[in-house]
Image (tube, rainbow, N blue to C red; front, top):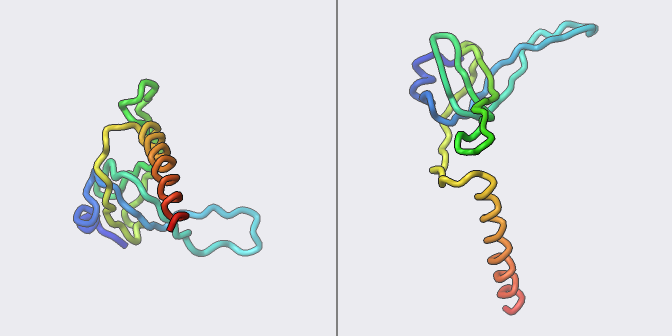
Length: 123
């Protein structure tokens, strides 16, 4: 398992990280009890940590949107259950909302995608 000093070095608070962890399993009315924890993985922002816990937020509202409520969803994990953690590179934010950025990318793809098809047919 991963200790607190390893977490700080591999993925400091505020970074985006990949986390592989052991999760509790609830079983009910099974012929044989389950004897192992489930191995799971997630990706998100490390928003807080203390001696025993790690908070990872995997969905959050952008503050720049007019309907933003500032809420988020995530996990609180026991550090003793973390198998692997590593920081992930994140592209520098463009300042555009995801919605506007996706529209611009689709427009560029349509415009230049069609042009490249014309060139490929003429070769």
